[in-house]
Length: 342
Image (cartoon, rainbow, N blue to C red):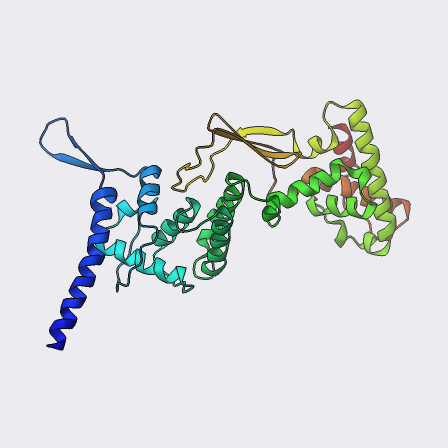
């Protein structure tokens, strides 16, 4: 008798769960368009995979929890709820329930992206700040299971800060942010110490003066000369050249089209039409008539060859002036000539 009662209760629970999912499937997750082919023989079934549909479905299932033993797999490009069958949906919602309780387990990568898409769309969080923290916390844990999400998370977290106009300090760990701060240091060199200018130049340089034997023997002298040379070159370029010294190093500032949350399933639920997010004076994002753009210097992933030529030339000449026993292998003064003449 007890078994019958337990079976009855379990059936009612399962029916309730299935009813909730079926409502979602029927009312939201199964928006389909049927279209005949040219020969009017077969019917094609098209699923509405639009970001708006994903957003609506996600908000509908926002507070749903499940406890279902799922041992299958799920793999799709740009995965959404519509990509899943009933068992996969229950498996996903069960995994998500655990995640929200702090129990993050390794699972199908497509489940991971659905969860990240939810957070990007504000599903399951009560504020942009909470969404940012949830994204960052999840990334910090899950990258130990699978670091293939790192590229996307770094990009999308930055976009999340921009889209929601969050504090710029949240971007301080990004490579782009550090690059621009270094460039700003060089642009405003007169406000910084010789040490700061030297460190800024050397951090971007293809030639590392920190490793120079001569620098290790005469660090203060090298720092002062580098600062003096850079100062004079800056004044010279500002007065006699069309482009300033930083434009020589990095090229002119460019404005390019930008896709916010590229490669994610994302719905613009804030309906942003016109908006500017300025990270600093040489790095800003703009949305005009719903079209996004980015304005900035090109951020080089490697070291800068032009700065390297300058620092190597300084090292070479200072060694020569000091009669330093160890000389650099250079073809005459080609590095210097190339820098000064180009």
